[in-house]
Image (tube, rainbow, N blue to C red; front, side, top):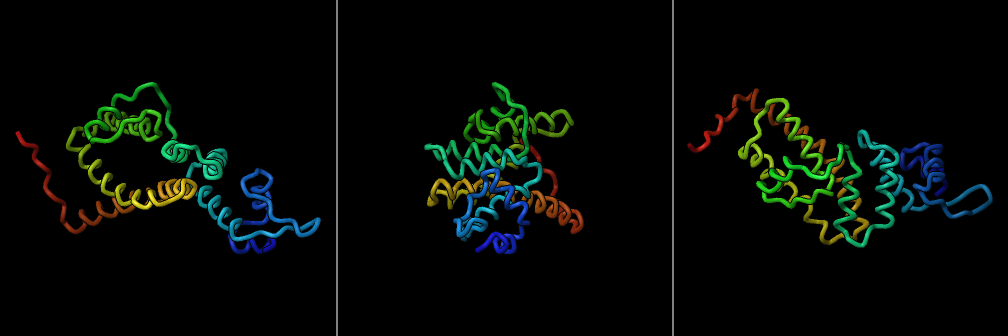
Length: 208
């Protein structure tokens, strides 16, 4: 297909496609003449990947390039590659040498503490904000979220074991970026439903 057809099928303007090519984000098509090139389905898939990443709120172009580089040339350790790819997604928080709040929460939840993984400083920042706002943050609250998210995560990562690293990176990044808003929306809808239906459960009483 010509670049005009690639534009039509992808919904991305020709000028933007040419920008992707100049920036090295989209491979050049196979030259068929001095002024035109032919593009295949692999180009269409790449454009759709770039467009999906570009649609992620707050994702700078430099981060899109970073993720594409990991897709094209993953590190030998797939866990490191996946961690770096997910770490390229927002929110971006300040890194430190230690994350005491996150470490304690992760240990209580029975999860793996790895300070280099982007979610650790994100959790530290989130817990600090909760504490600063005077909201509840005790083991019961942590357990509520950790247990629910472990169940969701278990279902989400199940297909990764059968994927090549390149496909796993794409799956993890897009899945993280695009399903997280779904989880947030469903949580808010559940709040609304419980309130309007009068089905709000009574508060749990901690054993004394």
